[in-house]
Length: 260
Image (cartoon, rainbow, N blue to C red; front, side, top):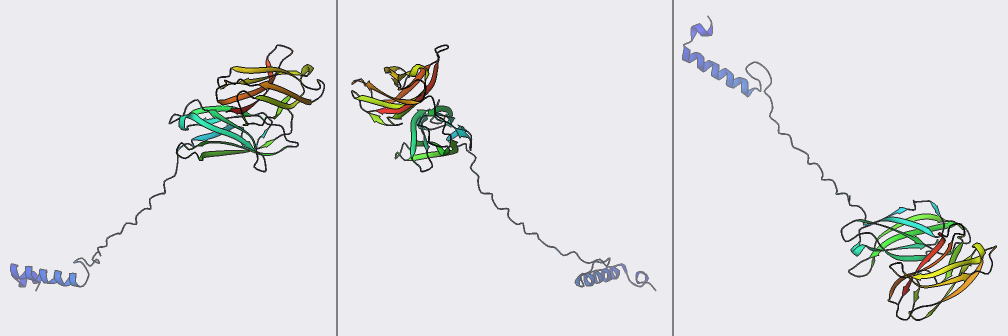
């Protein structure tokens, strides 16, 4: 006789309930399949990447390129975003001696990026060798050097047609004094011009110079009387020749002096 036939409806329901409870206690479902075990996955936290500085440098040197060979006067250019657009560029030899220094202005600064360009003029070395070109500014807070960038290059021993050996680049001079200028030159008929120009490019003193020889590189010496009322600041001492063909300025050699 079957269970259905021997039991009442209520009794049959009770039997089914008992069988289901027994199956569950043995870890199987009524259909014989294993009862799924509930598990909770624990997420592994992803580390936060360290922030990487992506801001552009406040000063850059774009020219000359790294590892290039340059000759004096060295042409330099780059970008800057410094306080009041002021920055300084210089050149160091292999021993770290400063060959030339210039205080210059970029086209803009104080939050607005600008560009700059200049030349560093110094006597050529006896033989080609390493040189370090630098650009930097000074802290408005404490006057310390900051935002320094460097460019390694090689300076050749090629001699420009005119170069000044004294005074030295960056030297301080006094208003009302007599400035003695020395150097070497090889120019047409041994003659060229020497000028002292203010920051605006206006000539305040000039003189014609004759080197010792017009057929080979030779020494020259010249004197310039500086105005007693000259305003303190940066001035350029510029030596240059004029083309015999069309009169254009050639062979320019310029160093910055501080009148104080």
